[in-house]
Image (cartoon, rainbow, N blue to C red; front, top):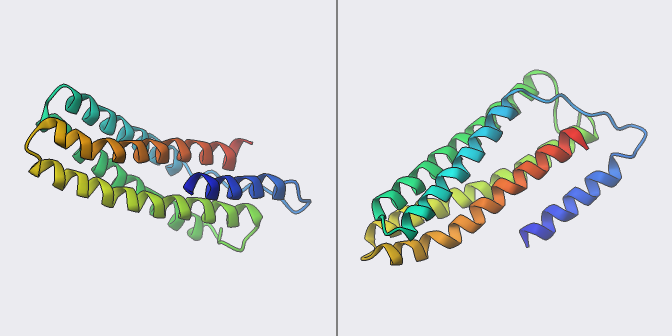
Length: 163
């Protein structure tokens, strides 16, 4: 469902950008920072899964905690970006590009917030697991969703500023 939602947003964006009134908005430098942060979060999640497969419950939990912390930092960074844009006079209704920027980053942020909640649940649940395999069973579906959100962010970043 999320893939279809963002595919619809993206195809609409690509069609709409062909309009005569289209002009790209600014690329806030903080977006580079948030992109690095979400990549670090995905790396933490990959580390968590590797540790879980090796039987290290402590490493699994540490990786989940790192992914959660970097995910929260990403969301905080996105809020900073939005505030910078507002301070520069770029609002939802400023132009079509800004409308899509707020729509796409906002929808992604909402899904990421859900992912952070899932990470928190996985972290809590892995602390109560009796074996590393049981803990990994909880963490792996969250990892799939988390990596999807990271890949989605990279696609959105490229679409918004380079295509």
